[in-house]
Image 1 (cartoon, helix red, strand yellow):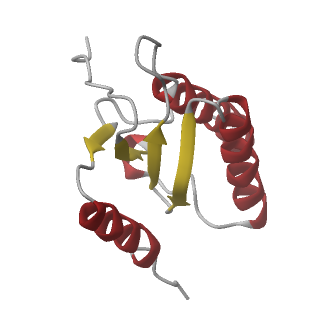
Image 2 (spheres, helix red, strand yellow):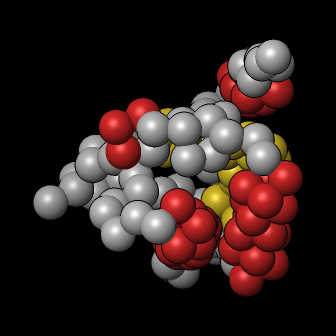
Amino acid sequence: MTEPRRLLEGMPHATTRRIRGRRFFLKPTPWVTDLTRYCVALAASRHRRGVSLYAYTAQANHTHANVKDLHAEGELSSLPAFKRDLHRNLACALNDHYGEAENVWGPGSYSNTEIHTPLSIERQLIYLWIQPVGCG
């Protein structure tokens, strides 16, 4: 069972998720790019009152997202539901596209790190923006 995560109101988070076996399911083809944009926009719009999405990027075998948890004191966080919806929709469509039936996401590959200072937010965003590299 996954260990519980601390989710404080107003806390920014840097999250990552890796594809099972580090396979290139998220290679930047037009179809995968459009699908990823759609799934991110759908999850963000469904959870717009509870999550503010700073940035999102998908590399060929993993994703990065920087988000802020907007839940108020005494309310449940929307961050887990946002990530669940995003990853579920993306996985179902990728499995259908590639004719797969296995898990898309690697077990234990989800990482969620709290970001505590404005400088750390800037560093996380810079890392997210400059990490992708051009191929070919």
